[in-house]
Image (cartoon, rainbow, N blue to C red; front, side, top):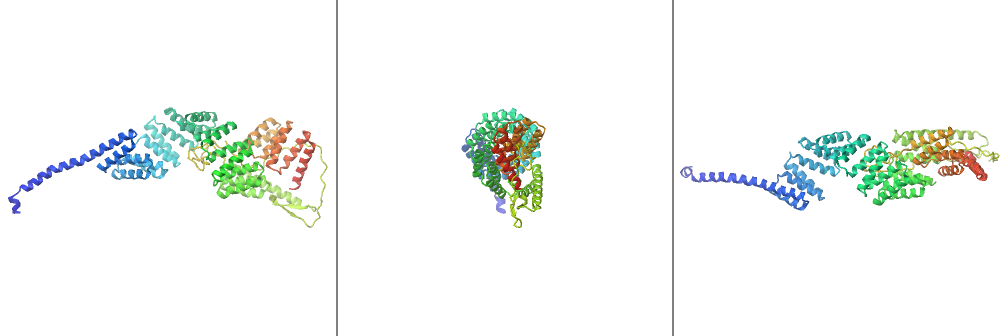
Length: 603
């Protein structure tokens, strides 16, 4: 202590140095931040010039100078992401948030990373945090709106897109996003308006022309949908989705040849898209080109052997070609792949019905009804199958009551049980009556096997379904009778007309026949067959209308097709026999009517 008192000079020197060095060190620390900020700005300039490597080097130097520079971490993360290095990108975004937890841009950057990686659940909290930190920009609300859209929370998506539009009226993106959300909700007219506003702000926005075409299809405005798709293809000739959807729209416009051309071009651009083969196969089936249809559907099975819908479609082709065992096997395979597929059970139930196996048909149709209780078509088919079984049982009981019965027909066509307690009695056929008037076709009893793999075609979403499940915005969910896709919002603006509508058309056509309006009836039957080409009842009905107009060649051709689809169709044989006799082929007419009696005797 005494020494200190005697010599205070060293203390004053130390204090003086401390005073001098203290500010100097603080200046050095601030200098590091300045150096870091300068390096960061160099990186920004390099990025703007497209020199990513130089930009990343500058951001790395900025981080080395000041590790708390959140902007540098975030900017380098963006460059890593652009270079495809997602792991390093995420690490940099995480570091940016760590060193700068109040940085709204950092949360926005990480949210976009998660959204781009399909991690919507992780993206939404980051976007919300960015907005809560006052980053209220149009692009931020648009990003969160897109995340809600991907999550199918369409109401919140619309709210965010609307907020984005208020913040910046000239941004085409939120108009597009709001349009997509409205398509998903079935608000097609509002969606058309939004897509139009988006295009007005960006006239060459190719993808929005496609989206607007889907919305136009939703309100049935196929001519304008076609115009939009023409523009989309002109802007981007290799857009497979535009070609595929245009093919579906052309089907709606009854331009099957144009649809085939578009599907073929789409197939050239993407030879591995299952939906295209299913769509083209459906058009071939409608045109009666069953072999061509089968080839496309076989290719679909080859490309996607675990997709139950491709087997439903191929099974339809087999039935159309009369190969019913193969058709049944395909429907059974579809059910094995997806035991909860209402379509699979409906399709197999239809096939069983076509073959007269009514008990099995009813079991499958009831299962389909359980899986999809809202399907009115299936409910109707169940009732029709039940009616047919009651009729079959009643006929069997009547025959069993006769003492000279040779065999008893079991319900559902399961076979016969021989009666050994009575001698076989051969009853000669009754004398041939004079040429009869064709019998009017009976009311439909069940839908024929579905010809398509899907009841919906043009869906809003790139489904790729078979698409299969595609992006939520593709297709025309639901397609003319192509199976699109892609399968997406569950709403189908351009849904293929299901079998119930085809049956409704057929019923209307029958009423026209009853009223004597045969030409109009032929048109209605033809429309029904375009929707469901595997309906023997419709062929029989149209054939009858042709007969009444004395168009015997056309009548016989329709009866031929009805019999091809259902070889046990008694009524069709009777009608064809009458048509043949009227056309001068008495022997052929007699043969057909004998065949009808044989079928009747076996019931």
